[in-house]
Length: 307
Image 1 (spheres, rainbow, N blue to C red):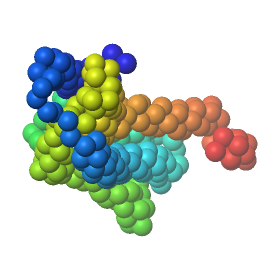
Image 2: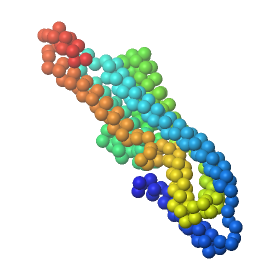
Image 3: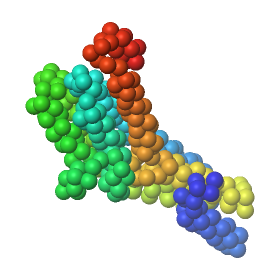
Image 4: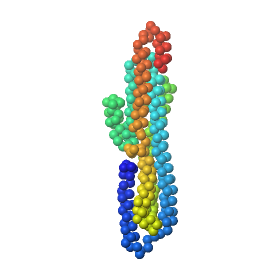
């Protein structure tokens, strides 16, 4: 309640002060007519309810779209690492191939973290320093868009693997399609982040809401007297809370509790990728225990069960 009410504490104080001053004026200047039909603020309140409902729906659609995009980031990140681990030709289970796959996997983890931090206008390089090499860090620092620079590193390694005949042309196309989907998802997040909800719409709602709070005491003072103070304050707080909720939902990348949990999602991706990588490393370690020349059948059988 402290967090929720803290978001509208200024509005609550203003409404409370206004209603108290209104009742004091009405009490000491009782000969002055201040009553209006309750139907007038009721009609305004109905209009505000419709406007707030529309704004809340539109804000929730933006928040839900952001969550859908990050769900696709999870799926495509898993797909990318699965493709790299299985497509890369490595009949001898070499250290070079193992390092290539591990670096690719860690770079994808870094991409997820950097995308979330950049959307929140925070440092996108510091959280990923433990996942990529110093050389790649220097390359990334020359780019304003850190996630896009990481995708460029992905594409560079993919090209080198194709030139070294570690993957064929069709496998390169499949992996590149996955990279393209990740790039599209990054662009969708940036569109949501950079598309501002119409300011005039929010301003008109706020003005109408203030008019409603201004007229409400005139319709209730003859019925409730001093009891109108807590009632009007509660009604105003409810309307302001709904408005503030819509404002928070319409911007899902502002590092607030109501945001899309991009860091938690990136952490889930990290766990999944590391598990996939550990399974590959376990397969590599088991197969290295056998002599490929002396026991080819046993190696083939054990490798099958590991996979």
